[in-house]
Image 1 (spheres, one colour):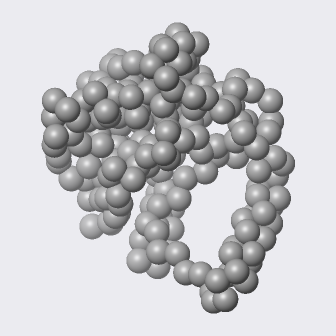
Image 2 (spheres, rainbow, N blue to C red; image 1 turned 90 degrees about the vertical axis):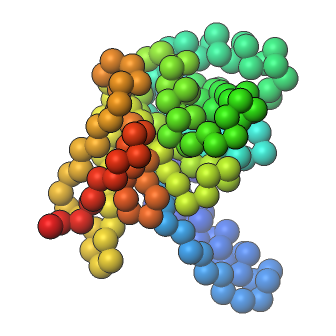
Length: 201
């Protein structure tokens, strides 16, 4: 949606009302995570096609991004040669498509490929300063966040209230200055599979 968050809220509410009237009953969604972005990408003008989130082919991977991928032109050129189609003018769409490309290559060699490990491979291909959040139909009920040089704040909602404290998640050496976290329900998981409890003790 182009414009303020309130315009996006109005648009979503209108679409929900339209969907509800078509099927004749109220819709209920059960989801553990939402991803959004409230500013425009460095590349591309404000428009529907350039707004976040961006998707890979068949919407298998979804990405929200803050920052800049400085080598996006080279990655886009490579992906175009591989037959990928692009719909936006952003560097974020390249991240979604390279994630799909790497998944298709890596899953052949490692059928047990985890979402965290996949995102580590994606980060190795990206240059620049960025914070990214990934969702995927291949990894239901998981979200992976990573950053290099850009800020990233993760908010958790407990059983009744939103936690007000900040949670810092660091793990592994992906590349210098990079951080990565994943969530399944309300647990954060580092690449070495150690759980970090998020409730207050």
